[in-house]
Length: 313
Image (cartoon, rainbow, N blue to C red; front, side):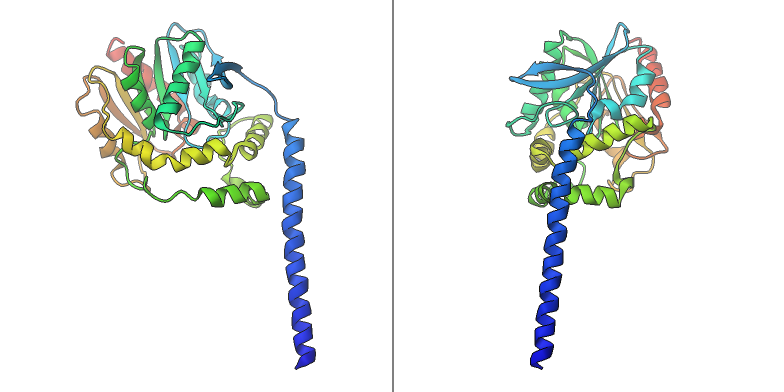
């Protein structure tokens, strides 16, 4: 029995040592890889000074009207993620993609990701670019920020476009956000390992290999950073704060939604409710996933332009 006990203890010791070595290897590989990838990032866009920090934006196209694109939650590189949509819009509009703090090539800020802070920073970036009249086009959670935005800066926004955009009253926003777990995954390097083991979790549009690699690098760089975690922790209060808001009656609003959302109950009716009092409001659906701008950019732009022309806007 004593001999068996010794063998068992030695086996447990070897197993613990192996696990410790594995964790150490994952940690070290992540540090080395992160430093190596930092040098491989290809700059794009331009920086504007917002609240003393650099916010990255891209501008493409020379149309008379300006479209400002806002990203969904956690989109690692908004300017690259929006490429198919920007390519479709830019022959007709000047297209500005905002990369909020913690996204893309923008700095990370120490300020909490409250609705007020996010919206005021976006506005400051546009003011820095001397852009004071534009169409706001928002994906996913930016539907919440956009709703607050058009109420605060109604005289600047000429129309609002939601791409499968969030609604303040949708369900699931009060679920606990596991910030500490995500922080541990990031710091330990296991988020990188999980990405390696399941590469299909990298969400990208159809782009060339170089652009896809840049999205991968920026995803690993920005994943669970201070601002993304703060934004996640503020999901519920931000949605709650937006529940008292409605779109201005005379503001043209069009939503492009996935036809078969199985995650959010009443997805289409929730959006129809948002525009029930709008003089110029419309909901359109397409077959596709949450990132409709990856697969339906051409249809989105065609129908958006038709919508604006019908209203003589």
